[in-house]
Image (cartoon, rainbow, N blue to C red):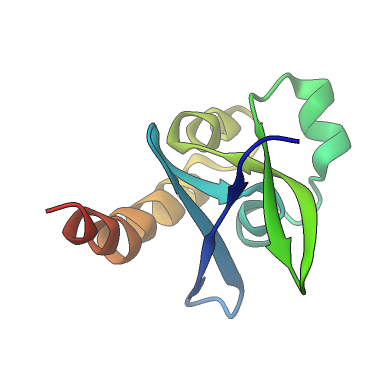
Length: 108
């Protein structure tokens, strides 16, 4: 097992929770949270078949270490080939405006 990451939860305006991990390479968002917002019909199996690059990370959820999949900005952007680009753009804009500044302040 690799490193166990801490994640933060944010409330998205559509009523979903978005869980985020801050890695040395940038922010990564739980794959299932991205899908809940931009394309509920997608799931991890379909993403693997579409060759979308996701990371596997370990986090503690309800006192148990769990392996989850995350997407970075590039991977989320690549979803534009299968999801309306406008939905992806709105989601990434929300992340840039509401979430990224919190982590940038943390490292100042």
